[in-house]
Amino acid sequence: MDQCTAHKLFAEGAFLVMLDVPQNTEIGIDYHSWRSGPKFMGIKMIPPGLHFVYYSAVNSNGQAAPRTGLFHSFKKQEVLVYRWDVTNEDVTTDGVTMEMVDRITSGIKDLDNQLGCYPYESLKIWYSLTNHIREPLLKRLQPIKTKISSVMQLVSSKQDHMMQGVEQDHMITGGTFAGVGEFPSLPAPTFPVDQCALVADTDASIRFTSFPTHKHPQGSSPSDITRHHMDLTYTLSTMLDSCYDNSIDDLLGEIQFAFVCFLIGHVYEAFNQWKKLICLLCSCEEAIAVHTDLYSNFIGVLHFQLKHTPDDFFIDNISKDNFVTVSLKNFFSNLEECPGACKDLVSRGLQFRDTLAKKYSWDFNSELDEFAPTVID
Image 1: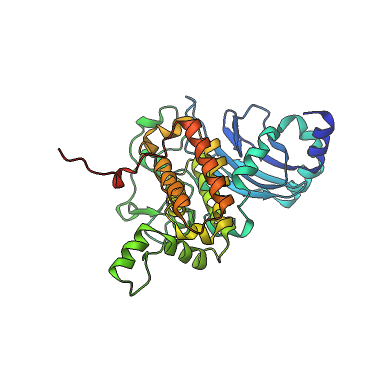
Image 2: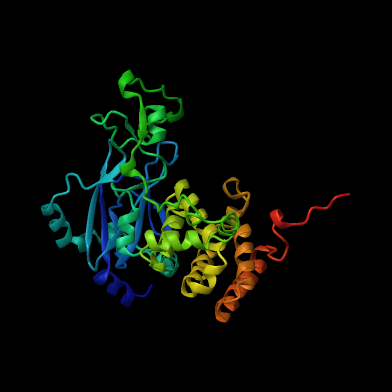
């Protein structure tokens, strides 16, 4: 990066200051992560806009705890200050006063050599993965507690007894992660009987959009029920109307939100939502003729997501059935067979198909197993 660009970014960019972070902690923003050094105090020159900050405590053996992250829309020249909570191995604003923030802001240039630079070379990648996530959608989807954890947060079933700041893995072993050398061998915790009934903390859960219970209108004939189960246009229309206020941007934004939470935040629940939304859009034929803009943008969203997905994603245990190829095979078939489909959309979709077939050697021309003819000897 040349000096002129660096000075401009320093003058216009935002700052994330993280006080008292232990050395070797995993710290990340958007598409990059690092291990903190002895002088680390945060990240500078953050471009204004939406970003995902995440971190993991690391024990003496170099093992990282489950990842925790949060989305934040940085403003121009904003200075966001957190401090490290040693007890909970988490970042917090507790104890960060306005006086402290003002003092850090006025002396931000003095911290220059203690702040890591935002990885500007990957900014275009980040924008391509999040360009449909708007602020109102983010507020609706993110947990009430705002932080996104890769493991389920638990609380006591008793309303007056909150197990705050404790992750599932930590509860099982009875200790905090980074401060314990022989972490796996710790004895199980001993809680009073009336405090041992633990349930998921709903305030810490991502509030993904729910799918309709019924996939067909009330009073549908048996043949119509079958049709609505084969072509999910009714389900898609119902969700667009009742859940997204007919905003295709919000639907696409949730697909991107779920993808980022899974790929970068390591949230398995987000993978399931990403999968369900892709399967829904790929299982509609009539909708292709009605929602041309939605499907044109959907192709673009998927293009960048698959482009920046690790190659081994399609062969590991979590995706061994590879729903992506099955869903896309269905989508490309619907695209070609939809009588009212926009010609430009069909051309864009088939070009996307050819690109994927070439890159991954996927065969989109063979029949899906469920529709393939049965050969009887």
